[in-house]
Image (cartoon, rainbow, N blue to C red; front, side, top):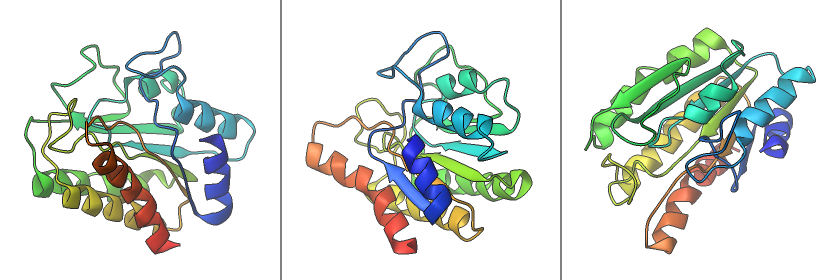
Length: 202
């Protein structure tokens, strides 16, 4: 993830297929996550002076409690999580902006909720870098999700996020985040959507 962030700063867009461990907190891991790769990368880049401000856009179906915990004392590293409110974790750690969604939310309502926040965050924060946790577990067939996005809804989400960030000339580092399905081929195809969206902008 740190390498992806450096590549994004150099080339505009980059991604990691091994990131998105957003439940890793400062004191311990949780929820299949040991180390919080996005938080570590953001802190490393800020402390070496490569960036001043970053925005974490976390669209995994679960709240980004670990990232919020790791970056709680970093006002210039802003955390935004849009997730299923009734899902894991039960002991949510408040981030800079948390948007809890009701169970069963579909494509159009989800994307409308997203559009309320992404442009104003990008324009208000003007980050040097965006970390995008493109979790695919908001999908209706996901075993650990509670939302109802379709494959096309996820495709539209990725195109929207990548497009909004890219057209502002802000570097974007994407990680894949969660996704839990028994059909591995379908799951892999969903994870590939964010990379396809970036490839279309490259």
